[in-house]
Length: 202
Image (cartoon, rainbow, N blue to C red):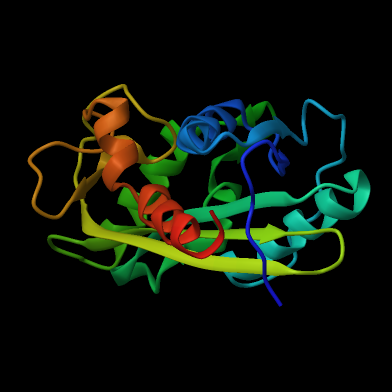
């Protein structure tokens, strides 16, 4: 069971991450859908207990839709490094956790340290994104996006967020951390997933 969003609809983006909220709001802007975030509404952060990006996105979207009575869109995304068995994967944010909050510099160092430990050369990686749109009655649309590339060290660029400085997408000389924000949004894993969402629900 699925349906489509219409111009003028109100949508909750199930995130407390302002960077992610701004990115999704910019992608939604041309479609006339009003967006607000779970963080702005004071909703709690649900525990992510699934072992797939789609499973965690569905969990977050359902929680926000049921709490607000509005359609809710959730994203779950991360970095999958081939030589590390696709880790950190759904634990991408967890690798950045410290007692004082998230430190993605340390998370990137961990990726490189573990790659060195397994002797990986020219390590392949992919950024993956699942988007799940859920209505309060249980109707949903689920899509995925993926961008292939490789890990570079040391990281390059101070744009973007998370692991962007160490990921160089195939066919590009720049890392995500060096790219113009809007160029990255067009070809990123979230951009690929969003285009699939547009085709299915907008």
